[in-house]
Amino acid sequence: MHWSTGIESWQDVVMSLGLGALWLWLSWTLLRDRWVIKASALRFMTYLLLALYWSVEFEISTLLFYTLVVELNWYLAERYKRKDSVLSVLHSGTLTALSSLWLSQEALYYVGTVLMIWLVTGGVKVKTILQWLLAWFMVIVPLTYFLTREEFNSQSYSNVPLGWWSLLMVLSIVAIGQWVQSYLKSNQKNKSRSIVAGLFVAGGGSLGWWLGSYFGTAICIMGLSYHLANSLRYFKRDRLAEVLFYLVLTFVLVSHYDVIPW
Image (tube, rainbow, N blue to C red; front, side):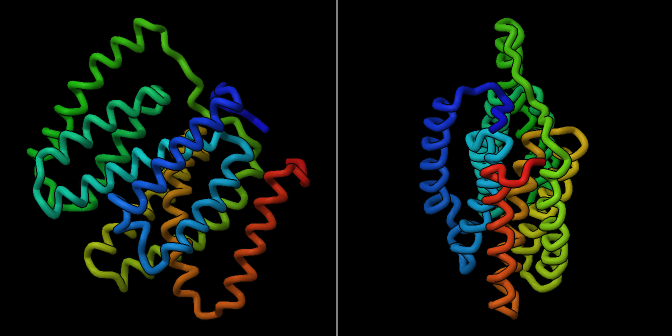
């Protein structure tokens, strides 16, 4: 297995268990509006399947960390739209800045993605963006000084075989079809969610494919888990849906155990 960011395997196991437990707790508390839904089992199942596929080339802790950061920012953006809470804006900016400690070279990807979430979710004014940037700036400046002074450095670009992307590319085509369906049939809140998840697939996939970004690949998988769960839920031929799912599962297991060398 390829440990791409240099974390020792036992450390990654401990970190993954901790982040996984935190993610499960949050998904059933703060984030239950997007995870504990009618298609709840399908989304968890799809996410875990793609997480297993991710672990072929990357540390699972990296995927879990990015999932937490992005999902919490998404929650804060939706909370702000409902309650117009300035604290949600400040917490989002602070969280995004602190997440730069994981892989500092990908900080701009975090910023762009989080601002996209806020803009698509709606209810955002110029003042809101300025407040967010202020919170981010007040944290990122001392962090940048610390990272520079400590000569902090970590690899932030993946180097995986081209064939690894084959599954994600096929699933992305299915997800884009579901994205269109969701946008046409959903209410306003679910329309914004389908757009955000669709941009995760398109934008994240592009970052991962062209720039080798861990963050881009992670949000691509998050977007796929959202749209593919909906695809399975509304698929009219249940038996065919099960067959397709098991085919993907077989492919993931074969890849995970390196039965077919890339």
